[in-house]
Image 1 (cartoon, rainbow, N blue to C red):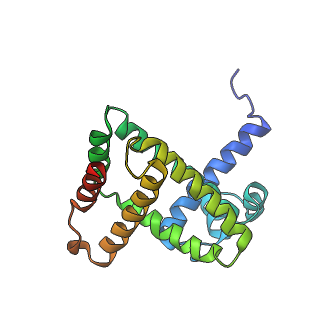
Image 2: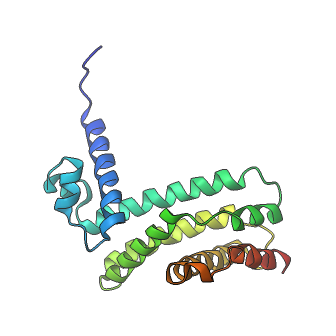
Image 3: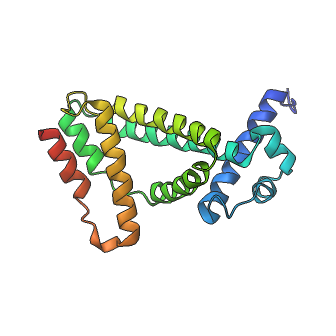
Length: 190
């Protein structure tokens, strides 16, 4: 029937989705501290009250965005790794994946939020819980026969990927393109 009105749950889901999309655009351009809830609400076409009603706080909005971005990243990794049958080829595929500028920008945003959350224990705990969930998801996709074990491999891989991304920001031409592949190859051989 034409013109059927969306249910309250459908409207809430649409509002949430539109606010998250606006938050992602604003945070990526202006950072966590450079973005206000008014900016996000205006861009999405809602009031600041709609943001508070949906997410309770700016930190709550960021954490919801973090969940969404990390789930997308895990899905991209699943798609990259699924065609490979053995740990060595999976590690090669992961290591040879080109650096993604959006991932680097999100890393900077996450670091900015992390430093903010470090001063608010309850927010830091929420952020830590989400980060651990992402790391567990990565571990499930990683090598199962690594001498490190899958969880330690995920920790090392995230630390390496984050560190390389920061090094590239500081000195774009000074970081060899094959560095991640070389380290992952050594991990696979260990």
